[in-house]
Image: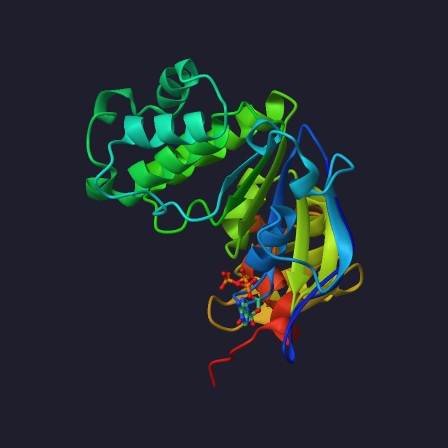
Length: 300
Ligand SMILES: Nc1ncnc2c1ncn2[C@@H]1O[C@H](COP(=O)(O)OP(=O)(O)OP(=O)(O)O)[C@@H](O)[C@H]1O
């Protein structure tokens, strides 16, 4: 478990992290979301003891990172996938990591296998694609078989196959009871990967909830209806729901009653329908709405 209490990090006048409190629980994938510059990386660095908080506190299972006797056995992290000596092979990079952290070298073979890099383990890491580098970074994070895993923007720049692999892999890690904390600025991706969400903007907490609840709160369900007798249908539906016209498609957008009830009302009144489709509000729009006050740079 990771627990942050009133965490703060100020760089001069910039409040990168500002009175941030949250809890990341084991056995779940928790997405750490926020627009660019929201303070995600700074928070992750403080969790890992790489940055000292200006105020407040963050602990892993009740201890500061620096107090952990064998940190890699407790916490694994992927912050920057390109952080590898380019002339080292994947295997020798991991061996070096293992030896310098008193982890048995035999573990290198296991983690290469887990991330699917066994066949290219002898190749220089400098020539790896971004996807392979991410896998190598994840192998490094897994070396100590840690209970807690932190990934900073792990899907950045990956192709769909790489993204799917990371998503499934995170679910597997959480399924094993580990704490998995993943930062991203891509809401739609996180909505599919994370069970819980911590959303921040300008260093402050905007929301901590389950992904399901976040979607339910942030979006509005509507039903799109098309009929050759739109005017009559509009009048009938208006007695039960809010109805607006979509002038582009010529359909009605109904909010307040489910598709089933709309279909029944149409049938009772012998109105032909050409379309009856439930719509989900765009999560991306909801996220932008929620964080728009906290975006560092706006396009005008
Ligand atoms: N070493 C530093 N010195 C000064 N300002 C910093 C430093 N590190 C981060 N900042 C500032 O703190 C704020 C938060 O940055 P941070 O990198 O933590 O955000 P982020 O949410 O990870 O963003 P991104 O998604 O772009 O990586 C930004 O305004 C950034 O410019």
